[in-house]
Image (cartoon, rainbow, N blue to C red; front, side, top):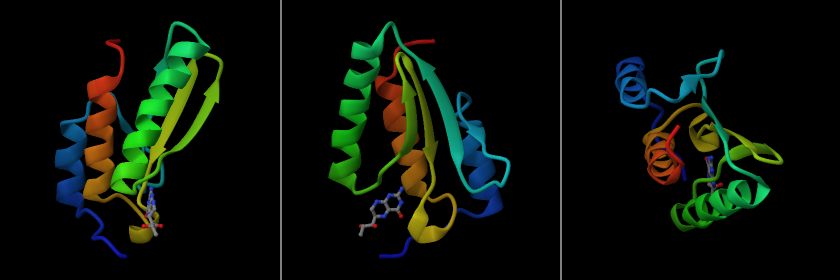
Amino acid sequence: MSIARLTDAERAEALAALPVWHLREDGLAIVRKLKFADFNAAFGFMTRVAIQADKVDHHPEWFNVYNRVEITLTTHDASGLSRRDVEMARFIDAIAPQA
Ligand SMILES: C[C@H](O)[C@H](O)[C@H]1CNC2=NC(N)=NC(=O)C2=N1
């Protein structure tokens, strides 16, 4: 099912409210890097994100090495950013350890 891509104004507003995320160079995704105490903490976090992702049918692109996780959010069905990315970013920020 298709979902609307954010307008430039909506994207700017969303990013202003997500200060720990940055816009990917092509403007089609947002990225956040996280660091945890160890692999167990990183993978525990990823598991919680995975359960939420499946629940809302919106899945992250991510990369993990030991205690580091890099998350990219984009909406494939919109070929860019949608409100689903913003909602997922908010969920991630809510469960991420404080920086
Ligand atoms: C069929 C299924 O609903 C879609 O393919 C969903 C699954 N998860 C998804 N995840 C992301 N990140 N973008 C999508 O467009 C997307 N679409």
